[in-house]
Structures are given as C-alpha cells and as structure tokens.
Length: 256
Image 1 (cartoon, one colour):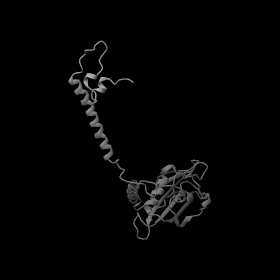
Image 2: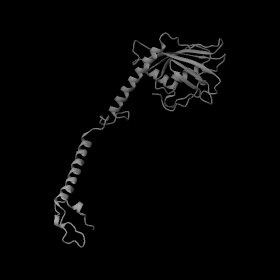
Image 3: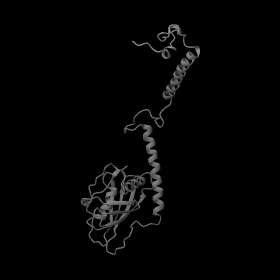
Image 4: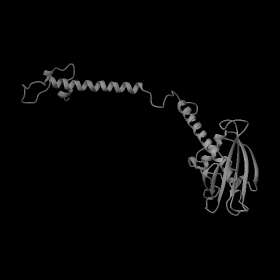
C-alpha cells in the first residue's frame, strides 16, 4: 500500500510532522516549515467550508418554478398545471382582442372577383367558449402542432388568420378565401359558455360545382378532434355540403 505524500498527510490529526517521509539520502532533512503546514491545512479548511456552504444552498433552495409537491390527476405537476392554464388564458384573451379589433365593421363573406363562383356560408354552435373556438380555428389555419388537411391526395394549404384566411388546393390550381366570426352565447363573455361561429368561404375563380370544397374549407377548421362538440350547424348558402367529401385529415395532435 502506497504511503500518502506530505501534502495529503500534513493535515491529518494523528500524523506528526516528524513522521513525514524524507527523500533518500537526506535522513536529517528538516520537516516542512510551519508556513507550509498552515498553507496546506488552510486550503483544506477553505475547501471543506466552501463545500458545506454549497451543499446547504442546494438543499435549502427550491428549484425555480417547481413550487408544487406532487402530480395532479392530469399527469402534470399541479403548480405547473395552474401556471400553464393561466398562461393559456392570457394568450387566448390577447388573440381575442386582436380578433375583435380586426373584424370591426367587417362582413363575414370575403367576396370574389368572379361573378359566377361557388360559395358556402354557415353558422355553428359549439360547446366551448369563444376564446377556445377561436384558438382552435386560428391554430389550424396557422398549421399549429403540424395540423394539415388532406381533402386531395396532396393537402391544401391554409394561410392568414381565423378571421381573414385563404386556402390553396393541393394541386395549386384553385384559391378560396374564407373567414370566421365568433359570438358568445347566452350573455356569457368570450371565456365562458358556448360560442356561435359564423363562417363563409368563396371561390376566387369562375366555378359552379366545387364538390363541397368551400364547405370543407370551413368544416375542417372546426370539426374533427377539436376537443369540443358541434351542438348545431345551419347552412345559410351552401349548395354542396357533403361531409364525406371533407378530408379525414392527419390530425397530428389534438388542437389545444
């Protein structure tokens, strides 16, 4: 077993200075001076004190943002869940204010440069607050969470905002404009109760038969795995509205 060197042994309580090893041929070498011992032991003491301070800080200081003690029923930390919900509600209200400012005095049907064109106007009531309905429709228009439609073999492409959107068919040949308006029901505000969605989609080229494309332009944004149910759907002006023509799209994640 190897003997510890002088640096390691100089601070051990049971080791005397005269026991420190000396180099061969220097049997009468003097032991290390007191200054060496003081330096050695002082460094050890400073290291130990520093280590204890750091350990106390780590144990006593809670992790930033982790004030919760256990998991909630939804699998999230309860503190995290409440913070996440509060952040989402604030984001929903910000989007709602943006929407209300944009649609002031705006008709729901966007219009078309073509005199003879296909069109679909409808209204639906969903069992969710308008802020949630707006977030869902707007998120799908923006492709949130990888959402896309797939009415054609190649998905169509939405752009814009829920209140002023456009969609180009998968083959790039046709472009439609569409818009949604949101109205809280039963005297409730936008963050509670149910919501009425009034929506309209219009072809931007000459067209008579659209094979339910304009209907599906709208339906795909509020139907299918949205997290809320359609309570009522009323078709105002929608000659072709075959639900089977609407895509069974690749909903990568439920919108939320």
